[in-house]
Image (cartoon, rainbow, N blue to C red; front, top):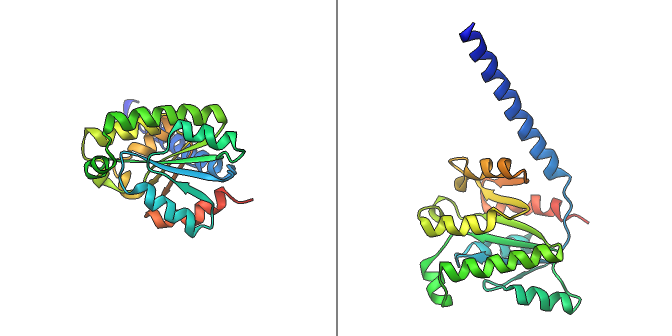
Length: 197
C-alpha cells in the first residue's frame, strides 16, 4: 500500500507541475503590453544596455537610463510622455557601480523608489536577469535580484540564469508570468508578441 501511495503521489505532483507550466504559458500568451518602455539596471551591469539593443531590434520604442529615478518617471508623466512599461535588469557590476558613483545600497534605494512610483502610475514592471550565471555569484547579485524580482509583474530570464530553477520557482511562488529564452537576443520575437498592437 505504501509503495502504491508513493507512486500515486509522485504522479499527482507531475500532473500538477505540467498543469502549472501550461497555465504559465497561457497566461503569458494573454498579456498585451504597451510602450513606451523605460529600461534601467539595478546594479549597473550591462544587462540594461543589452535589453535596449533587444528592444531596438524588435522595433519597440524604449528609453535606456542606467540611473533612472522615480522623479524622472514623475516628470515624464507630467509632460504627458509617461512610460507604460519598465524593464529592470538585475545582477551587479562593481566596476559599473564605481564608474556611476553608486553602490548596491544606493541602487536598491533608487530601484525601490522607482518601482513604487511605477506601481503608482500603473506601469508594468518586467524584472530581468539576462546575463547568465556570472551575475549570480555573490551577495550583491542576490540583493539586486531580490530588490526587483520580488515586486515585478513579470520575470524575464535566459536559460543560464535559471540553471537551478530559481526564477522558475520564484515566478510560480509569486504567480507571475515567466519569459525564459536561451539567449538574450532570442527575446526579440517574444517581446514583439507582448507589445503587439
